[in-house]
Length: 115
Image 1: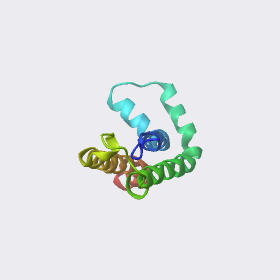
Image 2: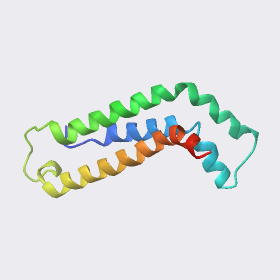
Image 3: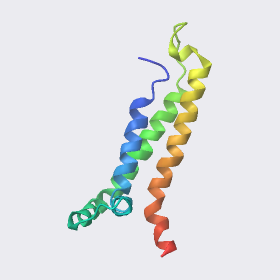
């Protein structure tokens, strides 16, 4: 198992964040792209599951954080985990994705303030 392999939890967190915001952000994005129809209103049916998606996203980001920062296992020389530049890139990518996902999660909460 690779020491710095956090792709699984990171991808799970991204998909859960998208799932949590699809009820509110999805119709807006589709309408902005010029895609409309009665079926767009059906996306709000996912709103009761929003807290579950948020919990899964936060759990997945927590696991990715743990793998990137806290788990320090022995690494074979020449492997990707032994290169500090690769670890630094993975950490930067992690924080960029976390910030974008948190923005997605906060849109439904903050959007009514602008109406």
